[in-house]
Image (cartoon, rainbow, N blue to C red; front, side, top):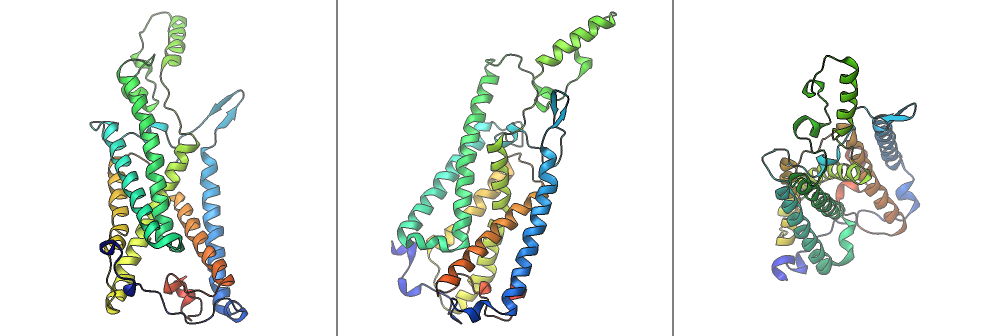
Length: 312
């Protein structure tokens, strides 16, 4: 295990600059400003999500429900179909299954080596989230491959290729007749047989939201680790072990690979979920430090510094 974890003498914890569970630590202008930044971020992200998420709800016209395509729209097949038609969905499924088990094994090993304290770090929150993403993605891909196989073998009645796959109906493809009434009857019958592209359900939208949370969280954790923390640790003669290095790199590799293969949309307003995910972690840290005198996992979260409002 020494190869994975390194020596305990090399373990590094930030130096505590003040006792965190005292009134003086929390009742000051620095905490007030940081609280305002967090409150504003919560309000703006919530407003952004409320404004655009409600657009994907179906509109009721009499007895029928219609759903216009917006930036919030997600189709069911977008959760499992590759971005290129020449790639079989099984390849994306295999990639997601491989990524899921690789990340799960690493997470289990890290938990065994360092215990439950690893979830004190934002990195492990993100790593757990991306593991869940690939687990859910694997299930959606397996279901999608089953649907694709049924369609390819002709088990599905009314199989329509091309534009029907996109939910587009072309009346010019229907047989024409001089009798207008007959044409209308044929059009009605044909339109009922067309396979309408199905909108994603709750699991599909959950999958997309986790994807966008991870896109921001992985970028944040890896950039902070490699460009801020690692140079600082190098100055302190801290030796990085294999497990730390792999957990701060393989998550980005798998996520970039999945992004290149899948055809998920990336509506920018859902970056609000990433903001709220990060805010939840910060609030969690505040609650822990208000109750327990403990070191901060990341020095820039320390509220005793006069630069804390700038970091936040």
